[in-house]
Image 1: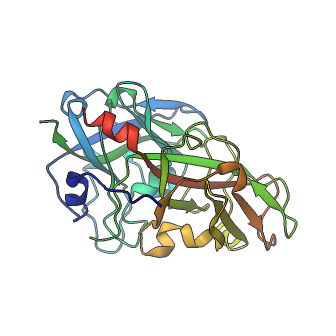
Image 2 (image 1 turned 30 degrees about the horizontal axis):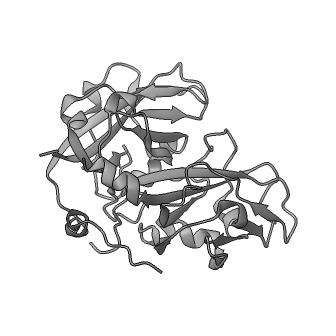
Length: 160
Length: 148
């Protein structure tokens, strides 16, 4: 079988974690959501002009003393909360690039959460370009009782 | 950390469990993305229905339970008609059951229509439920294109 040679920069990325830049992105699933409905992220110029290295879901869940994923819920609008894993189990994420190619298609959001995965830092690396305004969450549950704020940490580096 | 792979692309595939009879073999459907000759599978993740897993597939099927997942085996066949994965437990691909690390494979070209899931114990399965697998893959052509 032909030996597969990874590009040098991918080899370098095997040593986890290496954060170039990180920012938090959010997508809201409202109380009016229906099964099968798509909810898009807001565009972000920084992300659109970068190579995305990884994505991590930040659920509300409080596992043991690990409370560092909690955001300030008081800052959210009324009848809103940071999404816990239970709601994320009804949610899939799709990431696309500018050419509308799916980089990530129908990936379970909980698969991006390290609290689910024995607290192993669960950053799924993609090392590619994405266009945030073409990326979305697909909701597969009934209408949620509260507006659900899905927070993610996105890791990226400038193209040049 | 070793074991955290670099993925270029990810694709979720769902299968409907039409029968739970022991010995039932469910073939994967042909997929236009994974059919491409330059696609290499790097790792596979299986999902079960827990609050920290996946409840519904994109097609709206209820995902099988954790106990149900123990009654399934996976078979993957490559483009040389070799069994690359032969009767490997479905739950062995479940990342949370493996300390959070998805199971990697030496990259290979998978032929979907020859690959399958086999029911070996349908006790905790229900006909109509969904099996959900995520394939992390790369393609040499697209990888080079994205670097331009």
